[in-house]
Image (tube, rainbow, N blue to C red; front, top):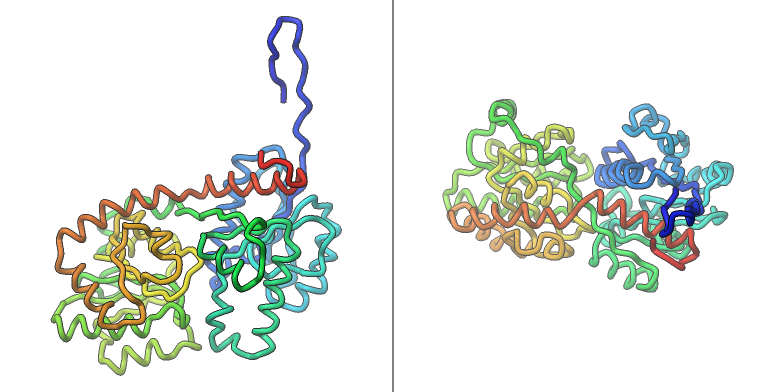
Length: 399
């Protein structure tokens, strides 16, 4: 790097910025059970190598995803890690692999860090504390809950800096993990450009035919876990059809969870098999088709760390009707119509209000894209790089 100084004979080279070796734990890339964290990791790496040609990066990926990790750059190396996340091997053997990598800094993109590895400074991204409040059937055992709480606390205590994806998540980290607010940086996520692509009308007709969609429909995209509140949504939808006689369908996009049988059971109990459509897992490349086809995206969640799906819907120009709980008002602002997620009557009333009000539909369509523009993955990468530099410079500078 050279810079011309004032004066014809005063040409002096500036010392080149020191290059560091930064590791990024990308083992959750490409995993269906952690799709949101996988997207975050993919966008982080892809945008970092665009804005930072100076530092050297190593991404630690699973053997299964090493060949399909989609980025190539002179300053990027991929390294396969045979130790799965949330395992004893992660704690016992991953540290040795990291110690041999010659890193100056390691960024863990989720709370599951090898807590015994302390040789270089670490940064950890905390997306939410969902398992703290909603462990679910799979993680309900006292041993698992203890292990989760111990690991997430120790990961944050070990970290030089913590990245929270929202102010709501930051406040949870402070309150429940006992971390100083001065140690936490809030860096918002963004919406992938591929979700903003123009959808051809024939693609919409194809999915309607394939899944038996014959009426205007509300769309939900996400997991079938307890905090997603799908049972109340389905019960509210039943009120919508029977009391208000509204000829809508409800489309639930996401992998059906055998540990959440209450969702399918509720659909059957209420006789909604023809009007509630479950598609199973849909690849990200096909999600824009569903967003574009829906009358509205409905998000009944009780708890989120950030909540990408409603922003993705807004990016497609699809109005959003959302829970008013957790971080949703923080992230969605005035671009959503809100309901109380614990009140089935209120959910039904707000869905009916949306469906029968041209004014509300138009206002939400207009506000959505403007709200989405507040979030950017390139900006996220730049702000994350600033945190790296702050740690690498011993906290003296964020530049």
